[in-house]
Image (cartoon, rainbow, N blue to C red; front, top):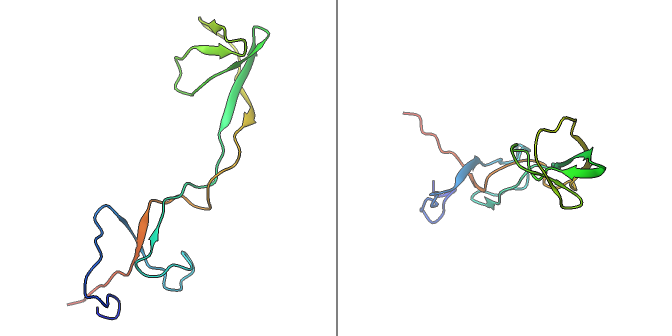
Length: 113
């Protein structure tokens, strides 16, 4: 244990996710033991849904349903609307190559009795 934890103190892992130390395997290359890695969201984009109605483009602010539809001329339209929503716009691609919580590289020590 003294080789891995020279201070003979185990790290405070309260509130941390433990990610097994890679130790050269190549799954999480470049990490050193006990290094902290911040959270990351995998690369993605969001569609911006729209529908052409009332001679204006109608934008839906979210996908929960039941919300008023807002037209580009700021008029609020109410009532049943029949039609198909399409996505002709999307946000810019953002994020990293994986989704992960903040974590600490930890060497699992297993003792067989």
